[in-house]
Image (cartoon, rainbow, N blue to C red):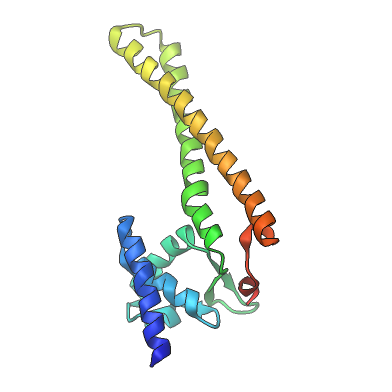
Length: 177
């Protein structure tokens, strides 16, 4: 009974955390279930433990993988997909904040540079075009700075984790379960 209560409370906190970021709380419940499992779980296992339908779990698991330290795998000779937690909140944080933000920033810079080039090549030189060009140039400059900051945080986090905990990127012994 105590184990179930502890599991419920921890999963509930992850649900609240997701909700605070505008993410469906079900995602936190799914993550909490995988996090606290003593073995890899299939979609049916997660559905049974959470009480959600397999369809709901299937839709949510992609988000869980994207924002938390969860990975999927198949056992040799099996078609069933399993999910396991890597027990590294730092990997999850990195995925959410640094990897996703970095990728989005790089994509935005690329699009802005492409738009700038197209606008210049078009030969349009009216007031609206000059206005767009000045905004685009400002945004490119700012997002390049942001990208530099993201990369610096990434490097410093790696160094800090290696120095502080003596393990690669803050991984724990549990990640080998």
